[in-house]
Image 1 (cartoon, rainbow, N blue to C red):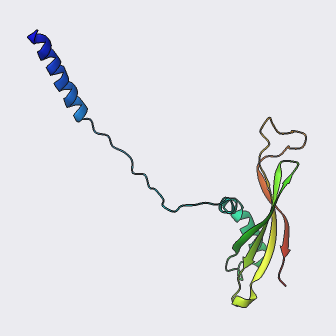
Image 2 (image 1 turned 120 degrees about the vertical axis):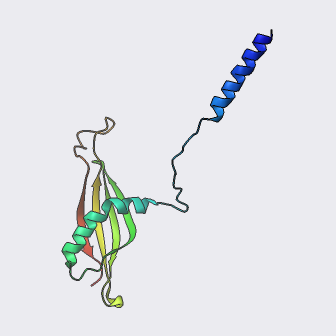
Image 3 (image 1 turned 180 degrees about the horizontal axis):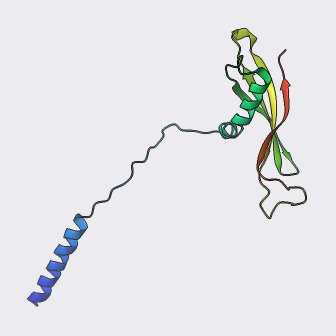
Length: 138
C-alpha cells in the first residue's frame, strides 16, 4: 500500500516538474492601433501605378509634383465581368490657384476562372486599363 502512495507521489512530482519547466516563446505581434482601410484605399493601392503612369504621360515628368486622389465618382459593372471605375484626381501646380482636375475612367477586369461565370461573355484574365482620361479644368 505504501508503494502505491510512493509511486503516485513520485509520478505527481515528475509531472509537476516537467510541466513547470516547459517554456513557451511567442512571437511579437504588432497591433496597429487605428489602422483602418476603406474601399477607396484598396482600389487606390491597385490603381495607383496605372494612373500615375498616365498622369506623367499627360503632364510630363518635369512639371509634375504628384497627383492627389480626390474621390471615386462612379463604379459600373459590365456584363463581361469587369468594372469601370471613374476617379477624380487633382494635379497641383507651382501656383496654388492653378491646380488641374482630371477624371480618369479605369476598367478593372478580374480573372474569369470561376465556373459560375458565363465563359462566352467573360474570357479575360486579370487586367487593368485606362478607358478614358478627361481634363476637367481648363
